[in-house]
Image (tube, rainbow, N blue to C red; front, side, top):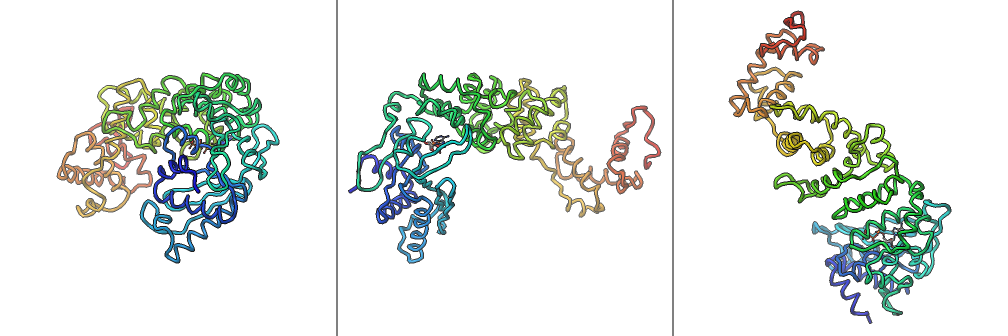
Length: 485
Ligand code: ATP
């Protein structure tokens, strides 16, 4: 018979497809005589009455094998038409084979069906060959598994199948710490074994509004230097987790104050303007109509880390955090944007004069910069570019220009660029204006002899275009003769 209270509460909180998968897993584990437990975060969240979509299940036995058997039994029942209808139906309502991804070195597996996944781990002990190394994993009992965990509040297990023992295994006093709202490490070398726990301690403290228990805090401060032993990939993972929190700036601010960011990289900082920028970047941060979605906000947090850094420092930070290529580009763009900013502040700048230089910058860097700059004019211009100007296109397309009788070739792109700029600057507001402007540009381009098709087109077009406007391109003031005219 099931223990009704916590398991019932757990099941009731699961979306139907996950509940069904969960039930199948328990049935299968029962039939194999394998003890299974709900462990770590989902149990902690259950006790805190916080919703959790993850399912972390520990099995005293081989998790990858159990995961494969679960996938097989689901797809067998599906083919026979006897699977619970929700078991294989993902968010899109499509039925498909469950996919099992196993990680044999860590004795773990993930069962994925469209829309969600369930993590299965083999209850194990972990030993560290040296600080910061990935652990060596050996299958053990659930009690050993709980002893290897980061904090007491995560060192909890709920038995999910018979024979029942106690309702919750809690060897480290995690439930008392949940009550007392404390983040407590399990032993004095915890942060030396794995200094990512320094980041995790601050993250959990912020997420739950808990305190880091005083002795744990002393160990944490003592062992900050062990952050040097952590690989970029693992740091990247922890930073991504932090960026997924509802208030990542609180965590980074605290990590900065503790000296943890400097221990990761001496140039890595998190100052109040960066914290303010994080809040502005969130979906509820800007005034209406100027919000980023969650994905956009998270992408834009990365370049905020490069605020006030020069190029080599930004590069060092992105290397240290194993930034992805787009993230690296966004971080690297920040010093260049900082140099460009004074040019964006000038009075009566045309919109096209803002849009053109910004077009080559990654969007997350532009968002980050708009949230960071303390110059209201620069901010407004960046936001205008990001939310409007960037998306504006001329009425006419390349096909329309051809239909007007303009010859195909590189000049078409150039005319389209000018049409777009004219639109941005309010110099062409209708289709007719654009047709007129396109014909005029074409005619004047032809008057410029073979300039349009000249190999040195790019170098020469400026002279040609300025002559259209009666301006001189040459700083000497001489008319641009001898350049195709
Ligand atoms: P979430 O942040 O989504 O609530 P979580 O708290 O479950 O997730 P995960 O990062 O998903 O945390 O890790 C799952 C469990 O694995 C944790 O609850 C913790 O018990 C354990 N764990 C994760 N990282 C470490 C670590 N560095 N050292 C020890 N245990 C860890």
